[in-house]
Structures are given as structure tokens and as C-alpha cells.
Amino acid sequence: MNVFKSLITGAALSVAVATSAFAAGVELNASSTDLAMQGYDPVAYFTDGAPTKGDYRITSSYNDANYWFSSEEHKAAFDADPEAYLPQYGGYCAFGAAMGFKFDGDPEHWKIVDGELFLNLSKDVQARWAEDIPGFIEKADTNWTTIADKDPASLQ
Image (cartoon, rainbow, N blue to C red; front, top):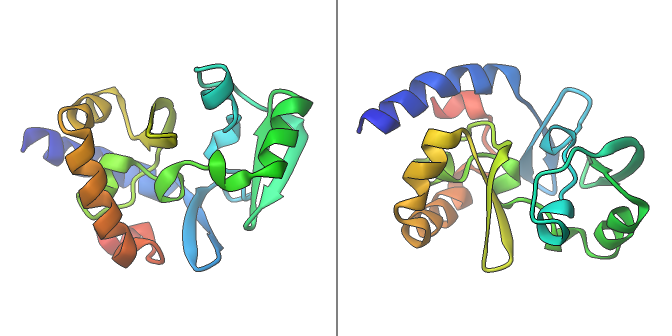
């Protein structure tokens, strides 16, 4: 339970810093300029197997959020099928969603599971989530149906 308490304490800052964009009734974790994933290239996780900062000059918009890419090829892949590359839970922390909260997903703490991208808040939270990935995904999927359209601060 200490990890959860630390998650709650540390997440207050993430909630305060992160703003959101609403797309198709689902809140996305995006900056005040609607930049998703802190400017990281969502396609790179699948093609390069690593978090990669995107280039602000190579941009696509999808569901009221802006995505940056490290190459024109990545942009083209995203434009052809954006849903294949988007992080789950609107880019919020997968462990947080499992606990019923929306915390900032850090693009440096990620995992692809069954072809889907998941982000977590921190290294410690990622380690905790890794203890039962299928169970936490199941909990997060269930919780997401009720928290997707809620403001992160309202879940505190």
C-alpha cells in the first residue's frame, strides 16, 4: 500500500501540471497546447522499440490532440491508422487508471502489451504495475468506463 500512497502523493503534481483535451467524449492527457504524449512519437514505440521525441515540424492532429513524429514515415503510419498507435487510457498512467485515478503518463515508462501501448507515472509505478499486468489492465479497462470523461482533479 506504500506504493499506492506514494502514487497518490506524487500524482497531485502531475494532475496540477497536466491539462486535458476532450476528444469524442474521452479526456486525453495533453498539454495546454493540446500536445499529446509530451511530444513523444507514438509510432516509435512500435517500430523502434523505444521512446523517441518527435519533431514539432512533423505533426498530426487527431481527436483534438497534436502528435509529433520523428519521421515522415511515422507520421504516415499514424495518419493511416491512429488508433493503432495511441496509448491506452488517453495517455494517462495505466496503474493509476487501475486504481480509479488519472495521473500523468510518462512516455519514458511504457510497455506494449498485446499490441497496445501503456504509459505509467514513474519507474516505481511501472514496477508495481508489472507485478500483475493482466490484472491491472482488466481493472483499468473497467474503471476507464466511468473515469474517461472526468477531470483528473475530480478523482482525487
